[in-house]
Every structure is written in structure tokens, then in C-alpha cells.
Image (cartoon, rainbow, N blue to C red; front, side):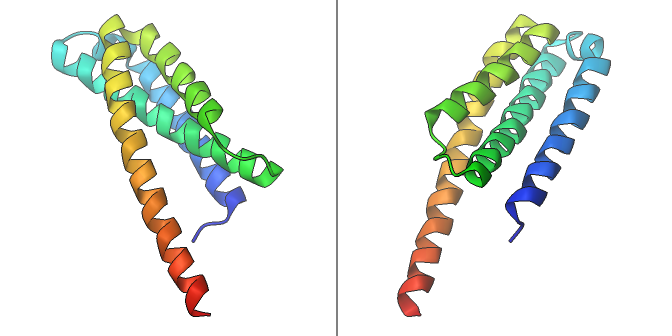
Length: 121
């Protein structure tokens, strides 16, 4: 399992690379309907990476991660999506909800596994 610091660094680097690529190819992403949906998906990846970064930062600071981290990460992703195309905002939001659901599912599954391990020892 990755440490908080390395996970935070990796998510920041991935956020930076994806943001740079989205800015570079903004014109291409806004050129057709399919690319616009792809732009929304790419922006939702920005949501995921910024959420992981914020969550790891809060964990290393001793602050409990809550809805504030989700809202901040979503606002950042939606602002970036709005620079590509206004339909990207909608698709980014929808993809982000799906990613948040999956992150919650994985988190619950990992937490229950760690509770089972701690009960055995």
C-alpha cells in the first residue's frame, strides 16, 4: 500500500499532466460531440486526482476528509471543464458522480478488510 506522501505526489503529478493535456487539446475536445464527452471524462479524472490529493493532504494534517474535499475537487474539475465546452461541465459532473461512487465502494471494502484483519490479531 502506498504511503500518504507518495500517493499525494503521484496524484498531483497526474493532475498536472492531465490538466496540461486538456488545455493543449482544448480545441480538439470541443470539435465534436464524442470529443466533448471525452473532455468531460478527462475533467472527471481531474476531479479524481484532486480529490485524492486533497484527501491525502488532509490525512497527513490530521483533518478528517469530508464533503468539503469532494466539493472543492468538483469545483476545480468543473471550472476546467468549462474552459473546454459547456457540455463538458455536465458530462464531467456525471462522470465524477460515478467515480465518487466507485471510490466510496473501494474505500468501504478496504476499510472492512482492515477491520477483519485487526480483529484476527
